[in-house]
Length: 150
Image 1 (cartoon, rainbow, N blue to C red):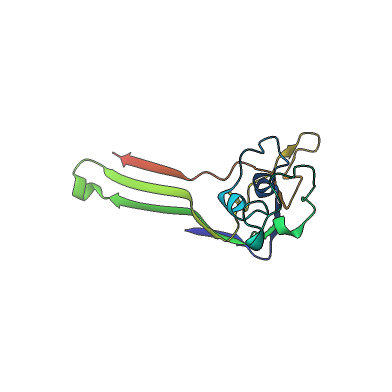
Image 2 (tube, rainbow, N blue to C red):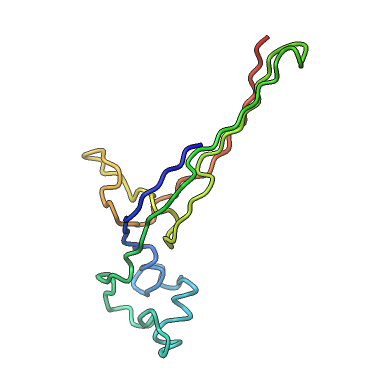
């Protein structure tokens, strides 16, 4: 078992910003929360600006900075070997492994660790460290194995 995590980490969630305002090219797509608690629909309990006012820049706001602390079960592996004395023809080892089994976080983005993009000139990953621009989340993978020694 391998656990990993980070604490005290903040990320600017630009995906949530784009999905909660009407500034992006996909301004017709909004989060449910932004639709229900925007200034146009619910001015008394508004958490978000007007969805009809697309000319105002709300990106420079701490509203989109989120706590991205997390704990992740990065790898869990189990295996068992059946000895030749029990199987009568070979030692048989059965194994299963899972990567990225679960992540505990309050971050509202898809993945608190997803890399934003790679800079081709310097070959460095996540050159916008601390900024979530929709990098693909870490996939959950399962691996099954059978090994036989004759």
